[in-house]
Amino acid sequence: MDDWSPDDICSTAEPYSTTSNGSAPMLDDSHPYFLVPLAQLVAEGFEQSIDNLAKRLGDAVLFNDVGQRCVTRATAASLFADRAAKQEIERRKRAEANAERRRRRAEQRQQRHEAQRATPPPRPGLPAALATAEYDPERW
Image: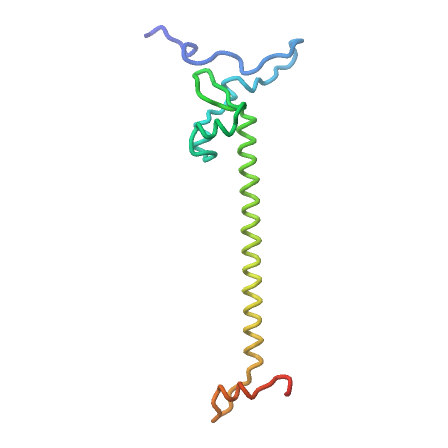
């Protein structure tokens, strides 16, 4: 066991390929370095199980060098971007609902305040119900 090297357990394949003319390297999305296991995406909450996520992603599912079901980083990034967009839409809806609720409460407070101003102060010796009943702001 003393004669092992990291190459025995790690892939030494380059995570990129060169173009046909040998110029600048191009990233290879299907290389194991650039694959995201479905288990990690399930842990992130994209589905309840790996099988469900694999069904949902269909042909985008690949197998890495150890046999795990994976997707490319680009596919994983699109899942995260889609989720972020949906969360932003939900956040905006909640903010709009909260703003509408605050607007209605302010309107109700204003109506109560106006109703209190329209009610005259009670006269001494006169029951409050009678004083309110005979008060008509249009007449005064």
